[in-house]
Amino acid sequence: MSELAMRPTHAAVMIGRCVRLSRRNIDAILTSLLLPVILMLLFVYLFGGAIQTGSAYVTYVVPGVLLLCAGFGAASTAVSVTTDLTNGMIERLRTMDVGATPILGGHVVASMVRNIVSTVLVLGVAVAIGFRPAVEPLRWLAAAGVLLLFLLAMSWLSAAFGLLARTPEAANGYTFMVMFLPYPSSAFVPVETMPGWLRGFAQHQPITPVIESLRGLLLNTPVGSAPARAAAWCLGLLAVAVLLSAVLFRRRIA
Image 1 (cartoon, rainbow, N blue to C red):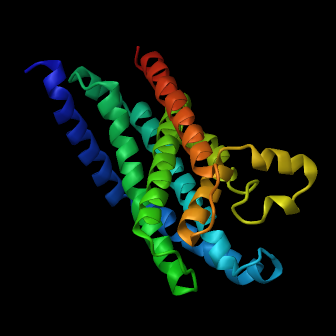
Image 2 (cartoon, one colour):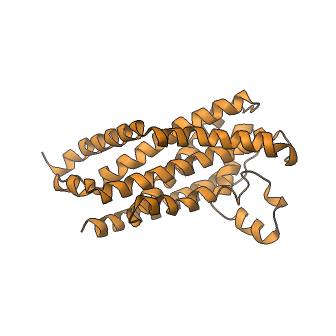
């Protein structure tokens, strides 16, 4: 069988392997599922009364928590890629002529599966404590498209971090940037309340247009150019991440 014909089989096997590994890692599952929920409850019930956003704080904060889910899932992706590198698994797979795309793609798809489950859980808890999203199916589909594109970009970027790191601990540290970005954005407080020097960064970083897109689409409010800017950021990050992953994979395996 030709190498081209084998690629879909390799990809399916690698996806199945990474999903099974995720399912067996109970600690990582609990962290990725429960920590975003705990943070949302913390923000809503401890800080929400002191933060004025013009609406119920749970309504304002949910999109930001959804992106925190992506950050936590991204951290485990980077760690799993580095672990495969350090324990020799990727070298063994390469001896069986499994390419870089199936190997890394398996980790990326597993990351997206974890994040989708976490997102559904967070939305369920949010509805239980007062979040009332819009009901228009097209807006839900658009919001899902924006979120999935963001998850894909973050997962590939984390795979690149995993190739760059020399130890799993270092890989976890590299993803701190991904997990930190929602905080200096419009995720938890309005950008207008920030100091001037921070406001400029918050308005022009990739998380803010994604947040504004999700908030507008889920709450049936105007979104303006936010979805277009969010898509541009996500596609740009995705292109950079895929290219960087290819370069780093060749260097680490050569």
